[in-house]
Amino acid sequence: MSTLLLTTLILCFAESVLPCQEIEDIQNFTHHLSEGLEQHSPQYNQDRLNQLQQVLACSKPGKREWHFKARLVETHVFSITADSFKGLNVTSSTEAQKKGRSMAQFKHAMRFPKELVRGSRAQEKQTLICIYIHSPYIFLDKQNSSILNNHILGAFLQNRTVTGLVNPVAIQFWHNMVLDASNATCVFWVPGAGAGSAGSWSREGCETQHEEGTVVCLCHHLTYFAVLMTQAQNLSQPELESLTYISTVGCSISATATFCTLLLCCFFRRRPQDNTTRIHMNLLAALFLLNGSFLLSKPLATSTEGLCRAAAALLHGSLLSSLAWMGAEAFHLYLLLVKVYNIYIQQYLLKLCLFAWGLPTLVVMAVLIFSGETYGHHFISTTDGYKNMNMCWLTSRLAHSVTLCYAGLILLFNMLMLVAVVAMLRRIQRQKGQARRHWATVLGLTCLLGTTWGLAFFSFGVFLIPQLYLFTILNSLQGLFISLWYVTTYRRSKSSSDSSTSR
Image 1 (tube, rainbow, N blue to C red):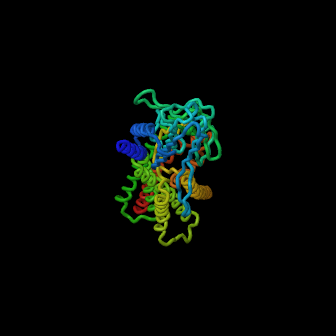
Image 2: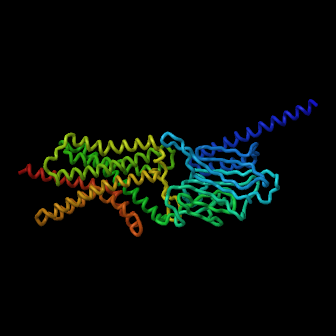
Image 3: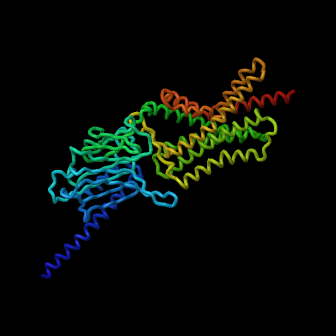
């Protein structure tokens, strides 16, 4: 009798301890996978995912369902039986704070039909496992395909393969973009044929439905699912590679030219500088930062999230400052050539610096403090939906739109100033030999005011490819053009002053 009682106590104790151990193991492997995804090591992450799947396949939930959540991974385990299973809808959400209140923001959902357990005995327990992954650094094919919001949803039954469902599994992906059949399609993961071989994304057997803010994938089996991005206006892979090469070379040349010009101005110019020269130097300094941060944005994209975020913030801030100093050049030109009289402004250069250096710095700092995820990894896709370039830049569509509006307002003002200068030059009667000099001045002002940045507003339709090449060539070399223009005008003014002194 005592032996039977002791055996019963041991069994009861084992039943209570083993599920707790399983819960701890699943939680640990979920967090390990999430940490691996943050380290950007696809093969290592695949190994961790396989370990998590093995632990889940051996699990036996002590209750009806388990839920585990890490930063980039969610795991849901359900215990079901054929006689009681009426279908299941699994929804994932994250908590967001808005005006002091906690709000649920839905990311994705999976709806399983009743026939999922077809063929199982009525009382036989089945374990349904759902794994949600929020990272691009896993399931990478040879083409480095781009998927919607980096969301991957997976599901499978414990020790059983599910295929050929009459009523499909519905997988929902929420988004805030304009998507249709031309730029987004449902895919599922096909593992590689052998060890070390890359898998691939396949579209066969999955139907894609587009609703407002939602992509619904209807598939007749269980595996890992995602939405492949295939934007029609994307570049081809050779075009992207050539543009990347041009921008890298052009920015390197401009960074070198602006740096050398700044050194020459600092060490070889002895007389006090006027406001015009100082504004030129500030613009060159901003362009040096812009070119340098752009060159850093691609290599730092493979580093840690913090370094990439810092590089993106530096690139954004230097772009805002460069545009602001181009606007300052236009305003200074307005004072000199249009207003002419009563143009004295107290602490003029200090106010320009507060506007062109201080305001962008405050904006970037505010974004980092209140919405740091605005900066991060930005993927550039090709027509095949492949992520052939990863750089550190803005990840928010709203921030991108606000930056575009800011640039548009400054460029509009600069364009009006350039038109005013051209009209003034046409009105003034000059000697015959000076016409070429005036048009050279207009070309120099075109670079100085950054009007070539306006090409960004023509990136659509048949203009897309020519615009991208013109935009890349002209603006990556803007620092070189301004440096040459400044050196030429400085030498011309110095020769004029020397000749007047000799008289």
